[in-house]
Image (cartoon, rainbow, N blue to C red; front, side, top):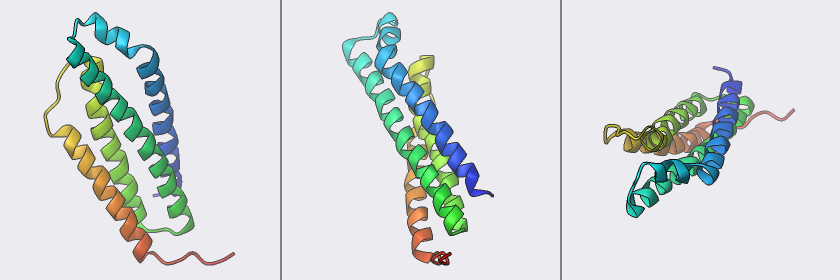
Length: 138
């Protein structure tokens, strides 16, 4: 797989994260208020959305890093980390966004499963850095 896939995925994930962050700041509260939520429910949903935005941006940057590392020092470990980061962002962040936006519930394991994928992705990235060979100087 080309390292460009991770860079492009990270850039697109970042763009979506910025867009959702803007919605969080300028429109989400109005939508949730119209649903007649209690103050506690409103605060919890806004906080969940905020956590999703932050982790999406963090992992967008992580994907770009993975792409750059894989470009410079190709390793299956880096590609595995990229896949885990992307899956984790979709499950974890999507699992926080979707219930808020769609006013529905997802199975309990979606968000923790995404978080676990992110954690394993970071460990995989570390293993790749430890086991990878240094790129040759050009």
